[in-house]
Amino acid sequence: MSGTEPLFREDSYLSTLEARLVRVEPDGGLVFDRTNFYATAGGQPGDTGTVELPDGRHIAIVDTVWSPDKLDVVMKPESSADLPEPGETLVLHLDWARRYKLMRMHTACHLLSVVCPYPITGAAVGEEESRVDFDIPEAAADKAAVTAALMELVNANHPIAIRWITEDELDADPGLVKSKNVKPPRGSGRIRLVTIGENSSVDAQPCGGTHVSETQEVGEIHIGKIEKKGRENRRFRIRFGSLPPA
Image 1 (cartoon, rainbow, N blue to C red):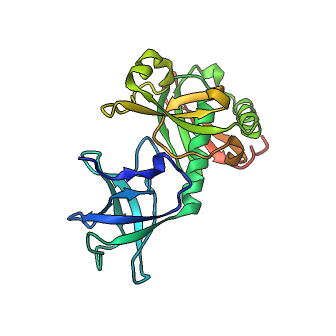
Image 2: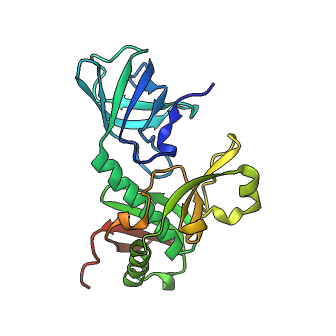
């Protein structure tokens, strides 16, 4: 069974899309043959937006998730009233302002993993603030130094791209996986890599999320706080804007 075609994996900038409604779930969730809406996974929240009906009405989408079998993307409407019929071709509109913030933030998290090359124990992407948890010695945490290193990568405007490798290639290069507790999903035979820099010179790691196409798009960011979450666990909070004066 093929399931929903997740076009966001190939084109993060696809903000509007025509798609055929395959079915309506018992709870009102909409399943299309293809979608540009990212489904919650890997610390990145699901997309919101609207579905445009043939008569011009819009149905608000408040969340997007994977089906339990991970085959279909399920778009959750604000209300189950007056839902369209399966078989109709509708227009899917992302809340682009929100998505673009999440793309910038997710990319910032990858840059942080370059600046802080330690095992990742957790992460969450947000619209205004993201966090990455590292298994890291206390002496290695300095907000100003990390912020400066992050902005150096942002301002260098490195290209960001997607490429696919086989599961065997991943096994041959286990250092690509930075997460200490979560491994890339297997079973499809291939792994999606997000690369930064020419020929992956800055970074390459498995990731299913959405990202900007060059680091300069991330914009001004800083480390707002570093929290101690255990003997060697440090939580770095990334925020938009410049580092406030000490």
